[in-house]
Image 1 (cartoon, one colour):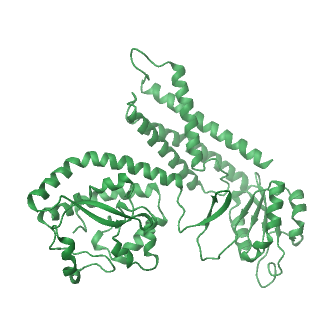
Image 2: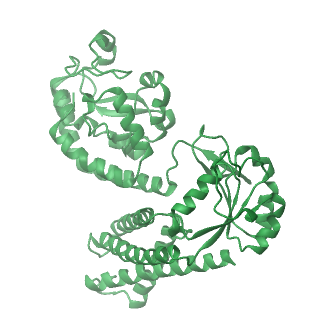
Image 3: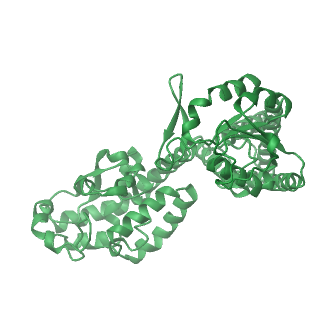
Length: 475
């Protein structure tokens, strides 16, 4: 019954979102005075209506990819709005790309206005609805009954979370445990239910049928995993959702993500779990940004290439082996700023290295040509890397790609910075570049990876512009 009700709510929410998106589409068309089609063959109103319906359906489908229609009972308001913003931003980007590709007769800001309008309307409705729901749940309405399996520290932590968030609207109706040490004086664990509501595993079938349990929360230590098969089987039989909080490996590994290995279910452990949809949006932005960047920078690259050719013998471009995502090697492209035999002369200059760690940097490197010094100061030599971005070897924003020689000397968590696609600019780039120590550099990169978001990327891009113009930290 609960699952069926949730599906109905999800369908109603999706239908509402589709209606809002379609209505705003038609409203903006009329406001701009746009008539789709050509003067001699104007597009009929019913065709425009069909396009609006199609856009509305596609928009709600896109929002569904961001988990907008999943149960959000334990989500915070900020997380809800962030997901909605990502979905609307991606929708606006896709619509803008389609309008540009097919030369649609609409204003260039039309997709931006549409995406922003949809976000404002849907966001406002959600803030209102969830605010009302939070008040109702705090007052004891619209609640869900939760049964906790376990009686140790993890169960205590789960109970504390439920009690600390009355806006979740969850009530603990019983505890289930076959151990002897859970509810004793030594543990200091006082259950939030009377003693007669602490049960053994054998009582589960009766509890599920008599207590109107909406969710079973497994919060037991890994030593009890072997005893959970009857619990999982009974929940599946009755149709009650089961959430696993079991500490399979204690604090050794980060939280897992559920996946598939052919027909088998899996738990995937990774230092950071980023949304696949958000990463796909990041890649889409990279493609669009790199394409536009290359088109706009071609005159600058051409002038720089001419300066290199006239002032220094050797090739115009410099290709260097770098390590990308998960350590995969690729050839990074730059405009040559040093003499042609710079790599061979590096060994003679090692004692002049001004950076700690495995990185080699000299502020007044004698190998740099006069034209190269100017190109480096304004980061013009980095522009050809937009080609690496377009090929998928790099991203517009991400940790700078290290050389294989640097990676060999990485210690501890340093190599984790390779868990994300390297970038053209990064936090290090806007924090002083060569003025930052190696240890601080690694800390900045790992902090970027752990807290990554599309909004963070945008902030870095905007901060890069004044940094490049000022030439701060470049050498």
